[in-house]
Length: 276
Image 1 (cartoon, rainbow, N blue to C red):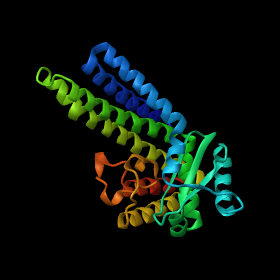
Image 2 (cartoon, rainbow, N blue to C red):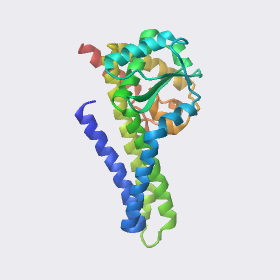
Image 3 (cartoon, helix red, strand yellow):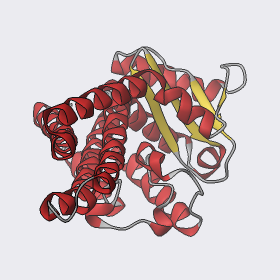
Image 4 (spheres, rainbow, N blue to C red):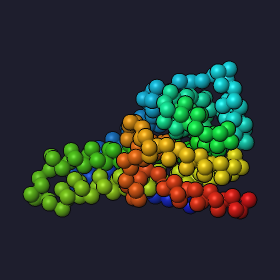
C-alpha cells in the first residue's frame, strides 16, 4: 500500500477518534473525554482479537481442506507465495449469492472466504483475480483497519446518542445538535471513505498480483450484476468486507456507499492493463 493511502487512512481514523473525544468532552468535560478514550481503546482491542471469528461464524463459513477443494487451495497457495505472506485458511459459505471477503488482524492471522455462488459464476482466472484482491486486503491489513473504522463509527453514534439524551439540550443547543446529527454523520462518512479507499488499493494490488486486471474487472461486473438482481440479506455492519457490497440492490451511491462504483473500479483496472 502506498504511503499516501496510508497517511490518508491514518488521518481519517484520527478524525474518528477526535470526534469521539469531542463528544466525551461535550458530555462530561475532561473526565468525559477520558471515558471516551478508554471506550475507544476497548472496542479496538475487541476488534483486533475477535472480529474475524465473529464474521466467519455470522455467515456460517465452513473451513475447507485441501483435499476437499484442491483447485481453490492451489490458487491461494500460489498467490500467497507470490505476495510473500503466509497462506491463509480457506472458507466456503453456502450461498447462491456470489461474493468473497478476507478477514483477520494481520497476515499471520487471516482467512479468505468465498461463496458457492461465486465459484459457479466466475471462471477460474476470474476467481484467481478475486482471491488476489482479497489477499491484497490481507497484505495491507485492510480488514483490521476497516473493522476498527466501523467499530469507532458505531461507538461515535452510540456515545453521541447517550450524551444527547443525558445533556441539558436547552442550555447547549449547538452541542446537542452536534451530538445528535453532525457527529454520527461525520463518523459514517469517514468510515465509508476509508472503506472505498481500501477497495481501490486492493483492486490495484490484486491486478498486479494475479497479472489479470481485466479478469478482475470482468469478475466485478459479473458479481455486481448478480448482486443487484438479488441482494444478499446480510448484516450491513459487514458490507464493507465483501468485494462487492452484498446489499447493493438497496445501496446509496456516492458518499454513502461502502464501495466505489463498479464502473470506476473497472476503469481503473483498464488503465492498469494499458500500462502493462
